[in-house]
View (cartoon, rainbow, N blue to C red):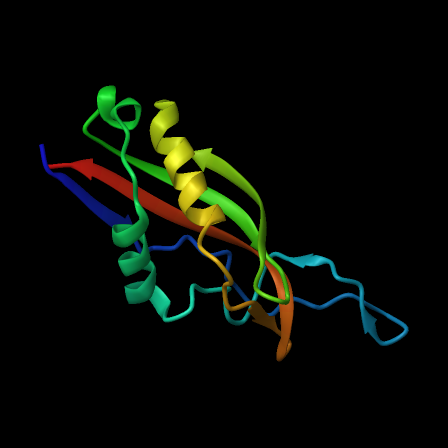
Length: 135
């Protein structure tokens, strides 16, 4: 059975108007910004993200046993240096396999481009939707 993998590039980024960066004595406090002018992104943009997902996805029998398709939404933080952390599945099929694979893909995705707020790199939340489909 051939496996077809796609990614929803609605990227569900947490974007809106500019967010005030909290400062104390002129220094950023390191707080996580929820709204950015430019959302954190995978280096190379959407096309590079899809290419990464297609190259690195690993399906196990457990991931595909319960259903033939599913979309998993993962939320995480991209810090000012591009490192990701605090990965969490916020929606998706109850099949543990898809959830584990989505988390693994995001955790191992390397450095991201940080979000921008008020013209500065900031730590910001990011959401991505990863769609798994058996073909």
